[in-house]
Image 1 (cartoon, one colour):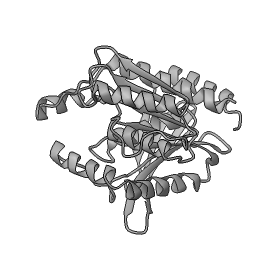
Image 2 (cartoon, helix red, strand yellow; image 1 turned 60 degrees about the vertical axis):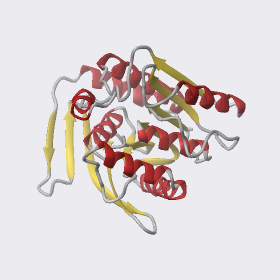
Image 3 (cartoon, one colour; image 1 turned 45 degrees about the vertical axis):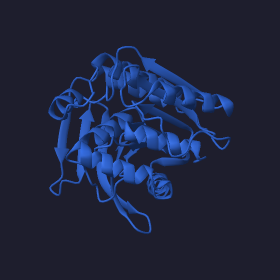
Image 4 (cartoon, helix red, strand yellow; image 1 turned 135 degrees about the vertical axis):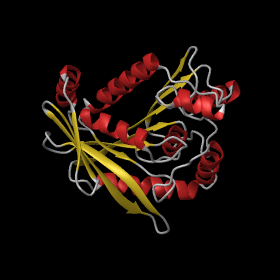
Length: 281
């Protein structure tokens, strides 16, 4: 791996100090520009495909940087490829990465109701070969970007997206790191000796979407194959703690979700340090 630490440190300092931000869109609505002093983030909608499905993703990078840098795949919650995933891609770009918010459902499809979200996510997780094809297509699209070092690819995921990212790592997909937030643990592929990815798993201790037995079994299987991982359970924290819309969604659909600003910030900083440690060696 190449040395990126100095670049990431400078970007973190600049990001913290910035007070002004502008957002513009081109006439066709495709390119988004975010400017914060010396940081210029450009996000663009892209299409990529498997043999059977067209996916609509969103790739973001800091145009002020030169040279190739690590690429990060961002896997969406069960609602589908939405603004939340795109915002996380932009935040990663601010840290110096090139980030691709992927589309696991195809055609940029988004669920409008929890029942629909359950149907979409279940269809993906029950057909792991299809899921892997879509994930690998996203990875190839990211690697093909001129700003990306194709030898340094990681993934992050939220909720359903965390399950996807963990399952991919478990199946032996070549990822440097996977960091997940409020992730499911009942995976279509559990840890095997094929895993070669460093893992950071951050869940809420009060997450009703996972059981104590699932957590215990998942950790046991990681230990059995000597996986390099850290599992954090935040006390008093519920599912979807990183998503600012969690409270309104919980109220609207009577779901056990809750946004936690403090833990959202803390967990993102933990992920930032996790990735920095990997890409500074």
